[in-house]
Length: 240
Image (tube, rainbow, N blue to C red; front, side, top):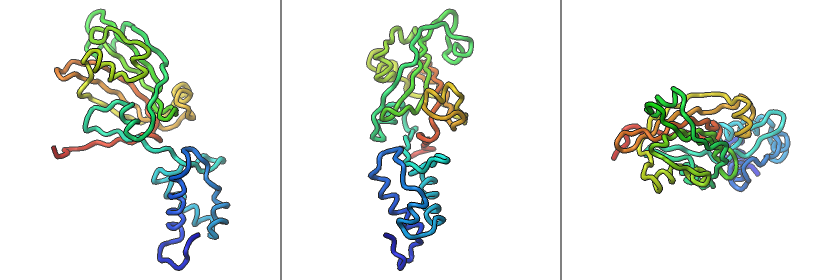
């Protein structure tokens, strides 16, 4: 219970106790309602609400209107000290990466994809569309385009394990640097259904052009990333 003799505000004591409780709960577990917590701690509902608001702001809880308050899954961090793959980001957070293959096809690229990949003439590309998962929960929808001149063969097993691992081990063509652009976007019906979210959910739209050491372009990728599961970390002029 809380101690009214302490100088620590009541809502802060409740927040600390809830934070410790959350550590032992599974992601998406519903916590007791605000009236119930107010009864448990012997305080007003407003005091409980203040504690929960801070936990929501700090990313430990999330609310669903007319449903309740739930434990938020851990945020997946993207660090840009090196060119990351999604599976590496997910694994570094202690989660299990996975993927669902939506489409794997060889095709003649349209003008825009040809321009991104610097393809001239009648070159072809691989189109690899996947849903990336963290502990089996969908978090990213990505479509990668790769020139078949650089990557002659791709199989379902190749792209479900790790595309970058395949590029490295089979072709020695893992990208070493990239230009990536992020914009905010809301999920449409199709993206929402694939990511298991409601339409209009906030997403990060990422466009990446990936390069080999010699400057050759090996990939253009378009990704839709759940804004509630990822945060971006960028080191600016970091010491070497």
